[in-house]
Each structure stands twice: as structure tokens, then as C-alpha cells.
Length: 287
Ligand SMILES: Cc1cc2nc3c(=O)[nH]c(=O)nc-3n(C[C@H](O)[C@H](O)[C@H](O)COP(=O)(O)OP(=O)(O)OC[C@H]3O[C@@H](n4cnc5c(N)ncnc54)[C@H](O)[C@@H]3O)c2cc1C
Image (cartoon, rainbow, N blue to C red; front, side, top):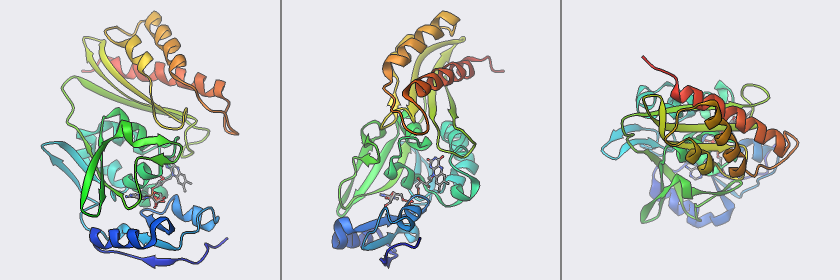
């Protein structure tokens, strides 16, 4: 199918973008990598009056180290995240996760900002943003506001963005010493959206988890912080009994949906498998 006719605009400044957003209101849609929007247009699941292509906006495709942490522009493509030495060093969780996003052709176009703004509950990068306690910068005419990732995702395909706002960057805070990161997901085939996934970090001392951040995806409307499982692991070595208790706590943390891809019971089971794998990886001895 072909998309319904639309007007096409390619602003070259944020001011021009905000003018267009004001002009079209709900009838204007931002186009970034187009990997989700273009299929939606082609299937006529979306038929906006105007497409506002932000790919020519300057400076939104930079990755910079600042005193606040690592700042990643909204237009940074998935494959740029994959290949950035700065991301590998300062946000290894993102580097580990992004290779699971679709296939290389999709990663060549898809953007970080698009993934966050779309808020697909099975997407990898929103969960990483929550696990990393990242801040999402949202800009509008006359200003910007910073929203913690934990508050940004409100529901299935729903965020804290209000009309006239766009995502311009995220900041990943510098991580305190002793933190380790691990990512895993289970999908039917590589490149498919995950049935369940886990983005995790832990401060590990002498083989024991001092504190942990566990964020699951594909098991709820938004990334789900597994606070019960985090508490069950805190201050402990990952002995079998601890893992069993953490698994039981994780089960209480989750209320997964069922759909044609998997039942709630399957998703709970997969989440437990991921927890055991990721905890093992976080606590294994390193040279
Ligand atoms: C076959 C296939 C497999 C895929 N597999 C995965 C996967 O496993 N995991 C995964 O996470 N994704 C997957 N995707 C989606 C892909 O990662 C997209 O890149 C991503 O979801 C959206 O990013 P985009 O830059 O392409 O956004 P677009 O498609 O351009 O836009 C998506 C939505 O976000 C809005 N938007 C975009 N940028 C901004 C911004 N800066 N501010 C405000 N609103 C904005 C748009 O208006 C639109 O509503 C897959 C896509 C395909 C086609």
C-alpha cells in the first residue's frame, strides 16, 4: 500500500520545527529514522496532514561527554550507538542492547530519539534509559525540560511529551565506580521484538551485589523496574537460595500482558530465565 498524501517539510532549525508543530498541531508528525513511522504511513495506520522531517536539524546527531554525563542527541542512529567508543566506555549497557534492535538496515536509519518517543513496550532503549537513570531532554518553543526516564514512559506508545515538544537528547549520568551492566533478551528470532528482556546494572563488591537496578521490557506497558527482585538481591551473593527468592520477588513485580506472541505465564517464565542469566553475568569473577 502507499501512504495517504501528505505535505512534506524539512526544517533546518528547531525554531522552524516548532513553527511547523504549531501550524499543524495533531495533524503534523515528526519523522526521524522512519523505521516505525513509514510502515505506519504505508499501512495507513497513520495519515497525518504533514510530515516534519527533522533529519536536517543541526547538532542532534552528536555524542558528547560533558560534566553531567554522556549526552546523546536524539538523531543519533542505532548503528552509531553500536560503533561509538564513547558509548561502549560510558554507557556499555546501551552498546550491549542496541545490537538487538531489528537488523542492521533498521539500525542504520532508526534513531535513539525515535525509539524513546515511540515508547514501544518491547523496545530495548527505553528500558536501558530507565536502568541508567538517564534524563530525557524535551524541547519546545521557548525552552526545554528534563524528564527522568522513569517518568517519561507513561504507557503503551505513550510518553510525557506534550503537543509542540520533541525529544532532543538524553543524558546518561556518569556511573559510580563498582557498577557493572548486563543486557539480555529472548525473542523468537534474532531481530524480532523481544518477548521479554532485561537491562540491568549492579554495584558488585567481592562477588556480592550491594545494590541493583533491574528493568524489564516486553512484560508491561512501559519498562518495568523490578524493585522487589532488586531488594531480594541487595547485600547478597548470588547463591541458589538467593536466586530463588529473587525469582519469586520478580514474579510479584510483574503483571505481564498476553498476546498472540506469548501468554503472561510464558513471559513470567522468560523473565525468570533472564534474571538468573543476568545476575550470573553481573557477578562472575573478572580479571
Ligand atoms: C522490521 C523491524 C524490526 C524492528 N525491531 C525493533 C526492535 O527489535 N527493537 C526496537 O526497539 N525497535 C525495533 N524497530 C523499530 C526501530 O528501532 C525504529 O527505529 C524505532 O522504533 C523508531 O525510531 P525512528 O528513528 O525510526 O523513528 P520514526 O519511525 O521516524 O518515528 C517513530 C515515532 O516517534 C516520533 N518521533 C521520532 N523522533 C522524535 C523526536 N525526536 N521527538 C519526538 N517524536 C519523535 C515520530 O513522530 C513517530 O511517531 C524495528 C523496526 C522494523 C521495521
